[in-house]
Length: 290
Image 1 (cartoon, rainbow, N blue to C red):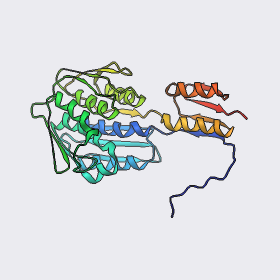
Image 2 (cartoon, rainbow, N blue to C red):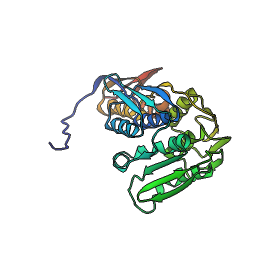
Image 3 (cartoon, rainbow, N blue to C red):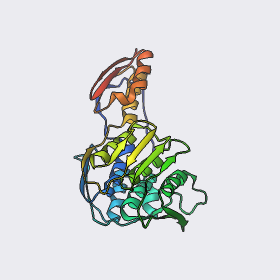
């Protein structure tokens, strides 16, 4: 079967669609459950292959994972002492697997996470993850395609300035810092809505994080976190795609389970371009011009 999509047009798209949870958030939320022993439940989970891969990665780390795709829910039981090695076959299949690095260092005081590119020299994409954890006292080396991290005495708070607002580095450092001794400050932090989603889940687990939604995050470490039930934020990229689909085809699409606050600029520009846009708390409607 060929990987081909054939579209015959022109067509006008009309009707209602429901947006799933954000792909760029759910995988990191699943990794964050490693920070607390016990069962955490994540809802509004999108039915995508990456979720299955992350579920398998967590199982190999000793977690019991029950993913109900029909109910859009994943339940993760984290043991008292998780495993600490993330295998190459899974990290290669999904780069977001690197997000287990921070939680594993925080919980296990060590981690062995395969590099997404294998044993490639100069894995620049992980430099900021590495430097942030090193600032908190972690010893890190690379051996046979694995990033080896160790912090026998536990993490300690530190101030760290990111070279640029990397989403992945912000997430890993923030998650690790929740269980560090003292206060960690992340300057030039990423501010995407998915970062805010993870921070709010961590706060529900008992973390102390201020500056959420800004480019400076302040995390006061706590002794332990507790499992939680958390709903994934709607996928703003999917929601925005449907908004443009209505505009381009001259259609009328109601987008449900979407946060218009995450698409303020997008919806304003569509209105300026001639679309009729109506927003409400849990979605919006876009009617394209003729």
